[in-house]
Image (tube, rainbow, N blue to C red; front, side, top):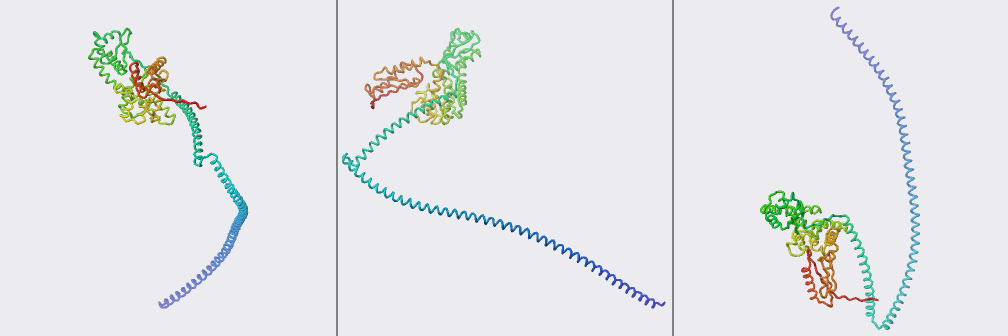
Length: 520
């Protein structure tokens, strides 16, 4: 074949194949469209079925919700109806109550009107009676004035005088009764407080002596203490101011002296001499001087121990030193420092019993006899000396006043002074506290009273406060104020000349006129 034919043939074949391809494509497209339509129909049908199902479910849910809302609404309505019903009942009750109150108010108003009417009538009746009484009183007054011959002012004054007399008598009787009851009550309470305080504080007592014993190793030491021709014992007694008694008593030497400080210095010095073995006048003077310095330390230590025992801090060092000196001072053989400590404790207990400051009371009690540590160096009694010392060293007014007035020599301005005075008396009167015998005590009191009664013009004499004071009653007819003063002076001088006593004796002469009448 020719090329032209081949080309045509190829072109025809190509056209045929193209037509076949186009036809097959159209056929496939039609088939696909039909399948798609069928699928779409199935989907639509399924969707419609599901839509119906969903619509039915939604309708059911909506019905359930409506039913629930309806039930809730019905409950709310029932609740509201119940509340309304309760409110209506309360309102009904209130209305009934208001009606009852209104009715009661009406009744009360009627009663009030009736009462007011009656009161008005009674007031009018009372006024009429008052007018009648006033007229009668005026008539009676006029009659009384005419009968008694007194004016209104005179009668009033007379009546007031009578009332004053009656009231004064009744007032005096009541005052006496009250004072008697008060004195009995105070006396009983005071005894209870003192007994309680004494029972709560029980202290032992030891009698102080005027001698001290010193042990020696052998009797040969006695000769060495005496020395050649007695020079050692003379030097010792001169340096210490005590008496050394050497007798046949084996193993001891007795040191005697009324000053406890000097006696203690002598005892310590003699012990040092015996231990040292070198006994001659020069060594004696050295040891006595050394012991005297040591004694100052002992005195300070005793004062500090006393303050700590009582529980009183922050004492002036000078006061502490004076307290330590009381350790070597006695009164009727009673150690003054132990006495002061005991007074401090008893004062504190009494103060606590009556609600006062126990610490301040103990301070007052401990320092009340501080003047005895310096009364041999200063003129005056130990109360005034002690008060001056305490005031100088910065103690408070309560402590100063307690030292000054614990023997009732002044007017009492502080309660602690009375407490200390009571505690001082308790401590001094304890059995065994002071060694003076009863017979000797009574004899001394009788002697004081007898000397006072021996003077002309003296009616009575009374020794009080353990012989510290004598009160003399002078007759008003036999003496004058000037002669009474002379009697007081003469009695004091007679005591100084005829008696030996510790401290001071206060003489008080009382001259008075006494009138007595009996009311029957």
